[in-house]
Image 1 (cartoon, rainbow, N blue to C red):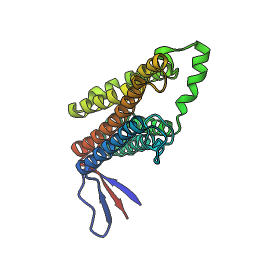
Image 2 (cartoon, one colour):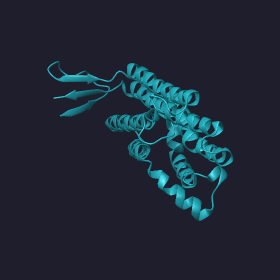
Image 3 (cartoon, rainbow, N blue to C red):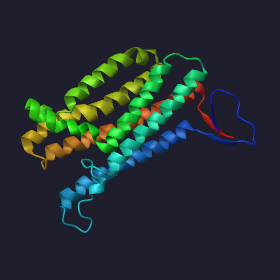
Image 4 (spheres, one colour):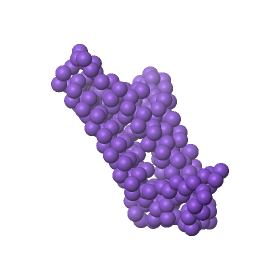
Length: 244
């Protein structure tokens, strides 16, 4: 059996205990995230300097703007990790009789959905139908940004009271993480659409835009996960998983 204990005495020695150390996990998350960012930037420099016809080819699996690549996999993994932390937070909130239990649980489900979408690109199926049906171009070249912006606005309005009720440090970190992630995923997608229309897919401005987009997403997801770890530590004293 796996039991979540927070804010309680440690279990008896005969049980296997796994303690979550928020600060150590956060440090490793930042190291991993910055490593993925470095590898993605190295790939962009490499193909710019040496082209595609090299022994290493185009290092596509490190590319920011590709499917089934390290940055996309890592972003999906980070979002799923946040969903797991949100589940722990919801369980801790329930155990302590706190409010907003539904908000934590729903947020966990949202992050599972974001993780799946990041890995499979479900939102991209909307691009062509919306582009052709509404004759979209320029900033709206990637048509999914229209329903995406509507969904983000609705979720933001729904979560505003919840966000304001959080401790100030957690609130500021959540806000910063959301600004980074949404600014990358939605904002830079809009900018990228315009640059793609003007200069083409192989142009430096468009390449710069999608690099910034992916970096903002990775850093935003990392900041959110580490802010959750800090919230668990400050609010509930961390978490201990007991296998018995």
